[in-house]
Amino acid sequence: MELSSDFFQVIQDMVLKPDFTSAIALFWFSFLNELVAILPYVVLVSGQLLFLEASSFPAIISKLFFFIAIPAGAGGAIGSFLVYGLAYFGGKPVIEKFKKYLRFSWNYIERVNRYFKGAWYDELIFLALRSVPVLPSLPVNAAAGVLRISPMRYFILTTLGFTLRMMIMFA
Image: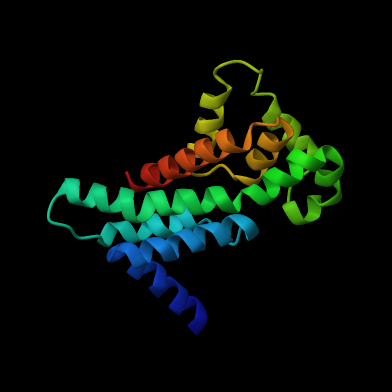
């Protein structure tokens, strides 16, 4: 019980007193959370924002963007490469083999893939799926790998989407 209260205190300190050190810590927390999907950190972090103090609204927004949203977005994007890579290089056999660890099956990937038609707007759909705070990211990571989205495009869209997700939760 004490460990969990210490954990929440660390998160609260990172959000209420954002600085470079807390940005690095949030980056690593987001990275690890995306690897093992411990908890919905977006909700945890955004709950602390009710207590954030700053001299003006633009100051609050800039602190949120530079010290919380961008580090969390970049960390989550890098952490998501594990599932993306498994799907990119292994496809259906790997997803089916590891489905109990991934917590989704190939059927879920097929449902996500229905949104993508190989058109110019696929990136916008992917970005929208990334930006929705309540949508789990693991199936989207796998779908991007199965669809063979280029790694650089995947990283940019995922970072942008996770950053937007954090900003949406803060709004």
